[in-house]
Image (cartoon, rainbow, N blue to C red; front, side, top):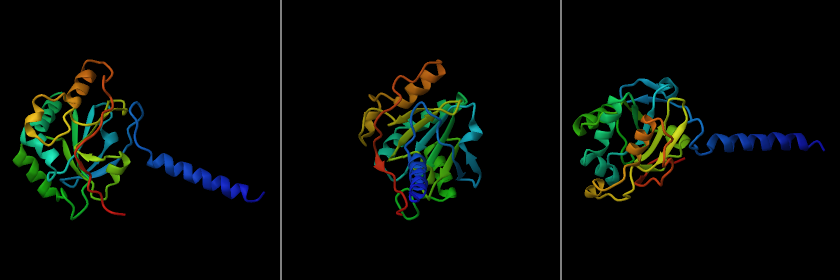
Length: 204
């Protein structure tokens, strides 16, 4: 049965690959990552251990993203988060030439013109961070608590449209989750359906 040992090695390799590509799960450690921000600095999720971190996948050409920025919905969340010591990381996983792809300088210009206030804008042109988190849409939101545990993933709110006027009546899942954490309570709604434009990943 000399084939059994190679077979066992193969199965172990397949299992490791599957585990590495598995989607993140609420209640489990958030996948750590390292990425370059718009200013050329290296940012690691683990650098923020002890702080709540919000991950926002974004693409300025997406109508759903435009809905939330044109109404100041995301900017107000970012500023409220910063005032409470929460780290907000905006992540752009658009591949070069695809909708939403920007240089570092262009990303900074966008933040300035829109009045956005993320702690950093991460440029993920290869899509490594996006695929690590199975980010599917822009926006797609994730919240990591101070222990490094993923406590929320899904949509920004419960109105899956690109209509700006829908923001006012929407239940904002991200704000609600952050309020729960601030109150020392578990997140009441930890998983929701993300909506928006598909992430414009680099074609393999």
